[in-house]
Length: 450
Length: 173
Image (tube, rainbow over all chains, first blue to last red; front, top):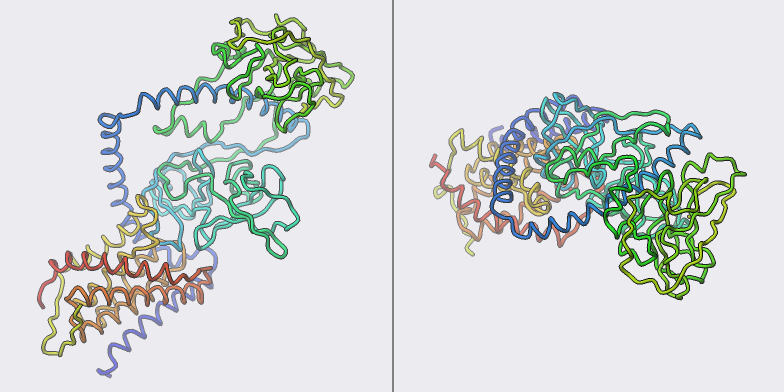
């Protein structure tokens, strides 16, 4: 026996582990048998990780906040510019969102909103390539429960796999093999399941080869898994490989899954019917902006008559017909801002996708205000000339379309209906010719032209 | 690169104090989980718990002790992941047993031997892990020889430095 002592021990150790493994595999549900071992291991490792992360964060904060300030001035300038652009975009998106909500309320849709979230810090990982999960410093004491979605401002990160203790939880990343997220392609509205591969790649399969999917298409959560609220960004299509029957779509994740620092756990989801009158629900990015120190504060929400604030920048409300340098939009009263200024041949009659429709004479087709959707179909949309239409260029073949401002269905053709705050400053770019007030295309369906 | 065969009489058996025997494997598991937070590719190439398993097994030169060390470290590593516990445990049990059995027969103090032994055991460990994970847990793993061999060499190089550092913790039995 003494001669085979070592081999006997080896066989026993291997046998016991295989037995344990088999039991765990058989109980494919929550494996309580292994929970204690996990609890011990994490309880030993997590405090060390938390300590190091805190020290590291403190040291990094001191260094970056007090010493290493190179390029901060430039960055500040860039960020201010970015804020201005985002403010403008926010106004446009707000209008779109309100319109969507009105439509949804008409149709009695139910929506899922993010009720509340908890900001958490990533303290460690599994340390294995085959198990893509991270540990966060929030647990049952903070109301974290299994299956709660975890996101960042960029997109979906994963879900809470297990709450280890009062202050530690395990988050399964979306690129783990065990993970699966209901996904929808933003453009084509095709639905599938987003899965992780052993290599860490994200893929969507079971989409037929005859469907049209393009690289760069955005993927959002579909809400079909009942874990993630609908509409959160998952990523973009990186590569498409045609199989015999299905497409193999490789996805570039929206959130940087390899470098996670702060995340948000969605602790409460609310589901209710859309109502047009209620305030806009809080977006994940807004919550993150408020809670995480690394993200700039959310700009103050524009008050009613918001254009006053927006118009402060001439570029933002350039009504002159000159080329607006960036995607700007503005509103007037209850009207909907015309989409970003575009460069187009005035009389070619071609409207690029997503751009403001241009009528034959080169003027911009008014996009009806959202409230016009509920207006009687017989109500005729009157056309309001762009405030600065009189100075806009239309005859030049390469004329740049002006930003036009339209109001509701009962708009006055006078530019006076435009809030006073709209810039009265003369355009920076000299107009070449005069513009005739263009005629709005009545939309019998009351739908916004795209 | 001298790999010398040692007779029973030449073997020097080492032991470790209890704090070292607990603290070093624990630190290896901890760093394996923590470093990918800073260097994401780390876990794809390095396996610190495996290096510690090999070191302890070779230094103690006792197969039972080696396999128990390997099993404990492997199970701790499994416990931090999401898959069933035991995959790393089984793989490291074999490695611990093999390294300590080899330690009895070879002079594992030289750099050359350590390089070769670590490279070999890394590949064995990965093959075992792959077989268990695919065969029992049904994980969808892909085997890539270039990656595995590259990682084996990288671990061996890191192992040489790490072993030299850990040599200071050894006590003659």
